[in-house]
Image (cartoon, rainbow, N blue to C red; front, side, top):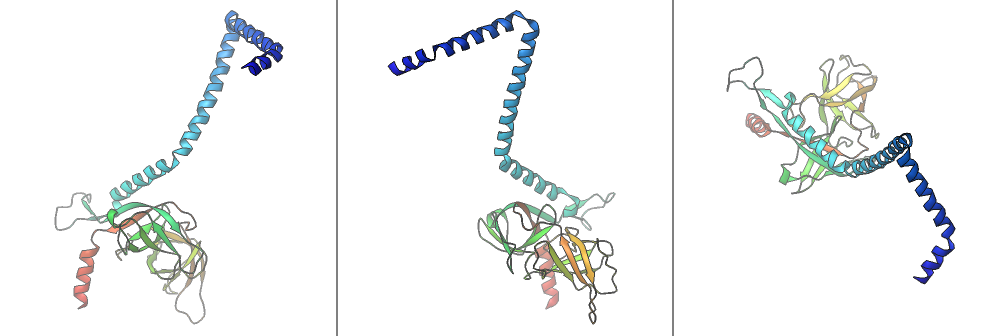
Length: 275
């Protein structure tokens, strides 16, 4: 305490100056309307700036919750979108082609681990059988297809990435309807190949490639990529097509697991016909 008094005594001149300065500002503020208005305006600007900084920090800290909420909202929108429904025939009368029943359901999940630089790449999701995820379900991202679920535990799912030669996805050219298979053999995380499209099919750089659907994995019309190059090797009956993928597989974020609600019925019928 004695040291504190000694310190205050040494800076008594500075303290006195600050005291008189504050008193002069108070008198100036109370005695002049112009200066008072200017002081209020300046203080409001300072307080507003501080509140803005606080809001920015709070918003940044809440980005995780905001992203999760947006992903859930997108999943709800996808579940209600017309592309996940199929026309009802034989059960109800069709009125102006507006009666549909849901064909697909989507489940929001987050990528907790992924690879893109290996010969065979995969992802791990934070949703499993408890959320309704099981093997052979398609996984799509905000911009295009991501992969196919290989296996699932109660809380996690292993996904084969489209950046893997282990899967071949049925795709088609949006402009012409010619279909083939998406097959990753480029060793480039941004591109893939489309195979088994005959040379007579007109394929041009810039054409959009999308899922064909009907395989019980992906709905029809999901973006896959854009044709980057088309080559015709001598002696081959098929185009060599390179596609720039719509989905950036080098990033991690929220994805959507697609559940085909009629797959079991369709698979049972197909297996019965194959006997």
